[in-house]
Every structure is written in C-alpha cells, then in structure tokens.
Length: 391
Image (cartoon, rainbow, N blue to C red):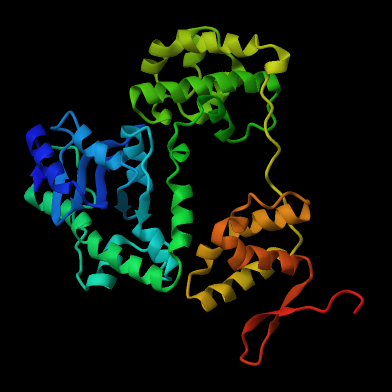
C-alpha cells in the first residue's frame, strides 16, 4: 500500500491501532545535506504494510503518535539512521526499540549481518537489493521502488519473531534490552555542540590558545551555518582553509581571497561574519580561552590487550557469539588503560549490564593475577585459577 494523502494515512493508522509493536524502516537521501531528507516511511503491523510518502503528506502526526507511544515496541533492522530521523520528528524519544541486527549478533549470527542475509537465513527467500541507490526523494516513485521498500518491513516480521524465540531460548533477551536501551537513548541523537567542533580538526595541538579561540569561533559558525542551510560543513569551507584563516587572521576581502580553497561566492556572503568572529576570538578574556583535553593516546603494557583478546575469542566460541560482540578491541583497551591507571572501572562498557558477568569480571581476575590462560588437553586455551601469592 502506497500512502500519499492525509486521509489514506489516517485510514492506514487506524488499521495499526492495538498492535503491541510496529515494524519500521525509512528511505532517505543524505549525500549532500546536513540532515537526512526523508523519502518514505514503511510500517507494518496487524497484517498490513504501508509505504507512507512524507513528501506528499505534510502532517505525519497520526503515525508519530504511535511511534512515540512507550507501550508500543518499535522494530527495526540496523536502527541507527532510522532512529536519528525519527528522533528529529519525535523529540520526546523513540522507545522501546528492537533491532534485528543487534539481536542477530546476540544469537551468534554475525555482528553486522545484512538484512538480505538475515531474511534468507530465517525464511529462505533471496531478496534482490536492486534499489539500494534509488533517489527516494524523486517523484514519481515506480511500483518496483515501492515493492522494494515494503519488503523491508514485510519480511522483518518473521525475522523478529524468530529472533525473539531464539533469544528467549538462549536466555539473552535481557542482554539485548540493555544494549538497545543505551543505543536508542535520545541523548545519542542530539545535535552536536557547535563550540566543540574545532576539536575534530587535525593538527591543532600545537596552536596557541588565542589561535584556538579564533578557530573555535569559526568552526562553531560553520557548523551552525551548515545546520541552517542543511548542507555539509565542508561545502561552506573545508578544514584546511578554516585553519589558515584562524592562523593568518585576514581583515579584508582581498586577504581572505588569497586563502586557497575558499570559494569567492562564500567570501562575498560570509566575509563580514568571519572578520567579526576573528575579532571575537582575539578579544576573548584569558580565562575563557579554550584548552584542549589531554590526548587519549595511552600505550598499555605490551601483550596485555592481546592476552584479553585471546580470552574473548575463547569466550565467544564457548557462547557461540562473535568475539567483538562480547568485547571489541576498543573496549579491551579502555579496560586495560583504566586498570593500569587505577581509574574507576564501573562506567566502562565491559563492566555494564551482561558484559560484566560474561567478560568484565574475568578480565579483572586475569589482570589481578587470580586467573590465567593455559592450553588444555584438547589443545584449546582455557581459563584456570592461579595459586595465590605465597601459597
């Protein structure tokens, strides 16, 4: 069902009423814009599927009311970008969420399994991803595009049902709930702070604080402009010329034009704003000058991270789950770093929820010398209790 009018939307939503869950997907374009340009919202529940056209329908409130409802489970595959879009439409947040890609990882089917592979695994059907690069904002849409889009929610229903059953049998439903509660928290989808964007620019650690202050103002202006114009920040001015402006501090259009990589049209439009920002940064009180956070580069003791990675590999095989789902190398590095520096470990990912029991506590025992790894009679690495010191 392709829904293009307000009346059709309201009639369709009436058919969704009473369902404890909604299967959702979106189609969008974002190659040249700051925000996603939404082309379709696909929904399935109560045995009906619909592709809703947000370009032709101005008011989506009838559907958004269901999406906001905390009593209705929202089901996605690889939910990150869908949630980013829907959280802009629903500032209250979108909860609770079920992500079939995350669920598949929890049952050992792969950390980043594609939707097509997942559908084939569950239903045996081979999906042809022929419209992957369609322009979903161009009208009219073909019937082939609409059918393709609807398949993304139609086949998600049996996938969801299979995964819920398998997670229940493996006693891992709570694992997934904890994982998804964090990953779908609306705080993750807040717009970035423009005044922190300067930190993403390369080669700034050697800059004097006053130059950093100018760069901070310029980068914040560029980010805000990108949001307002709905374009990529690099389309306004790239990092390199922005950094050069902060260093050289031009005070007239001719000097600004001499900086390579700054388009004349943008200079004409933004020169006065840039000169004002340079002065603002230069006149900032000393106590308000930016200070870069300490570099996060820390080299742990040789071999320690590899030792824990070896254990995670064993643990993953025991639990029939990919090792990097249990703990990836970033999580391992964070834990070893925290342990060696004597930091509080409680807020680290491997000490959160189910991971603490599955790997975090074992990491701690290994690093404390309470447990070690050895090659057992089967030729496999295994965890063993070590004798206490002095015994």
